[in-house]
Image (tube, rainbow, N blue to C red; front, side, top):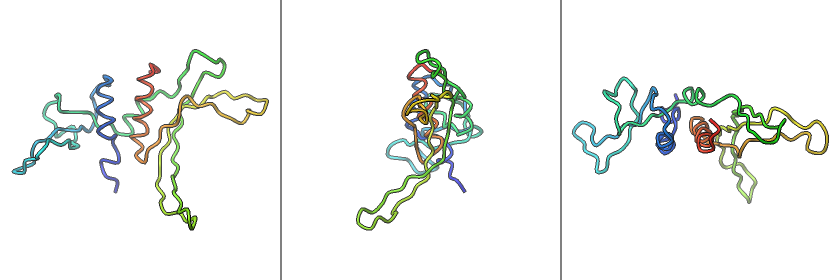
Length: 163
């Protein structure tokens, strides 16, 4: 079973979205806690809580957006002003993998699934040596957590006034 942490964006990205004034309306929240029962933390920590566990949303609550919530924020298409007709980009999300090899034996010693998110031009050149290439809006955003890859892309779009 997937952990809740693997289904929501990381706290650092959630904080950035809050700084960028993304509406704090989600199913899960990072809640600042100073204690659990009789145990008091030396330093307050953020824990993930379901909306039903939160009595009031305040400064110490940060939306922990799920993949579904993040997909609803991301536009399916981005159109920029320059380079017509190659200025329209569609969202593409891929699940791939990352491998590291042992230099001596060339054996795969580490493999991890990753999610890759980007917008790709929906028009391509039909002639010339670059006809096979697809233009991307930016460098791909990737992470082993799908929600983090989507959050990175959303942050990029907001910071660059594309949404």
